[in-house]
Image (cartoon, rainbow, N blue to C red; front, side, top):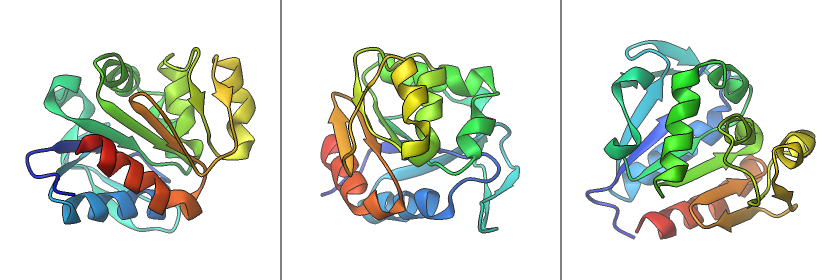
Length: 172
């Protein structure tokens, strides 16, 4: 599917899951989307759990939900660092509330919980954060990908093919 003209943010923070960042990054570029890496600070380099560095194209204070068609949150321990930044949490909330595609994999559900957008939503994640999502009001299911309106969630890197098929389908 052709995503030319679509703009997608991928959030980054320290100790992101390398596969859950780079697989969507290159898959979206391959599909023709403009991919923008958003970190707490633009121009900073953030290292993944496996040590791969990524430089943020821009900082969270310099973007808004109106600037994108979708937003992807990779897992790892990065979401725990991301949710310490109120502006990053607000960006996620604003994207969900404005109907943008918001996709979270593995531990990225923490950002959805912190953004307070899970009430009545059906989601999946890495099993260890199931309780966090349920306590935030979500209905949890154990599936490789769950699409609930504009929120797309997956469990682990093994689910990346289904995760990305769903994201690309919704963006197209």
